[in-house]
Length: 505
Figure 1 (cartoon, rainbow, N blue to C red):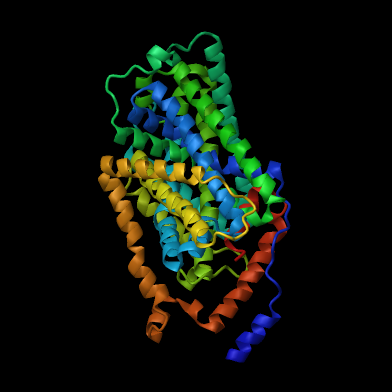
Figure 2: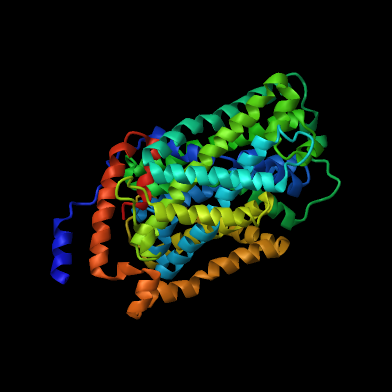
């Protein structure tokens, strides 16, 4: 059996890798395309609610972009210092070891991806149903059922054909660009016509109550949800042409551009809606369209629905590959590393992501879910950036093509500690439950991964077959075939290059 496994590995072709063909423009496209999603259509309400005034809300949107820029610069150093695909998961595993890497993977699979998918799906159903229920909140069961149907439909698409899933992603990306462009143009026209009273300083910063530090922290968490995705370029660092030059340049261009777009979108909202109207709206963009677009207002919910539909597809696509990657590394059951022999799709991983999303759909409210996932996201970012400082201390002489000033990670971590501390104080239940679920990964890691000499019946039960050489070599053959299938068409679109990140290990 040992000889067979060895011969199998010797006969395997080299693992497929992509050429360095992501230039500066493509790198900017990847960052912008992954950041802009459903968040800008739902977070404005939460940011305004917690900040207490229009002026503070706009300040938080700008500062959110600045914080994302600091984090991106730290990730740029990590990306070229540890040139592995997989982003945070790879960096934390390399720096802190398997347990920390597993906890990050566990929280992503159990919390971050399913919760983000649930939020986007609820946004989709809210915008679809808002015209049907113009004078009231859409029924709870209707929004959940429509969200679940959407997730199930796209799971079926992703199980059936990777090519179909990627075509959906390309087509529906146009929807969010149309929606934001329309909002900004119409809003600027309103401002030029003199409708900017709510934006004047004495009105914008007027407030009935002064928000607590904890409430401001929650406002930042709401905004951070809209900025999530700034670290996606690190998933494909190995494919960036001259990453030492193009990685920081892409960050300098993309994050400020997204920040400007988000700020202009919020200015457009406030040019036509009072704070009370925005807070009472269940679909901000729909209310905006009804006030300013008249008979063409139907364009707005359609555009946002297109955007969120594509966002659900994209997150299903990438989250299933994270499960696939974790299973290949032995951190998740090997069942999740299996793919359909004909469609070449990771059906078990997709079904796990779909099931987790539907469970969260049934137990959460949209804005609480945003606080929930943003807290865990920021926790993961902070651990990864703390790893940058630890790696510098542990390996001071290691060559670093990009080396940011220590001020950058220190400033980020100071803000990170304050934000999480005050968020935990303001929403102890939401944040505490997230921490508890994340820590449940500790016994899972020691029982499933660290304990290597498990009885054979346990291996059969939980299918951690990656510990056996024979299964490992068989999965390696399947995975190489899988990667060859994907590489052929992923190289045709820079937006789809993120598919390779969880396969090239």
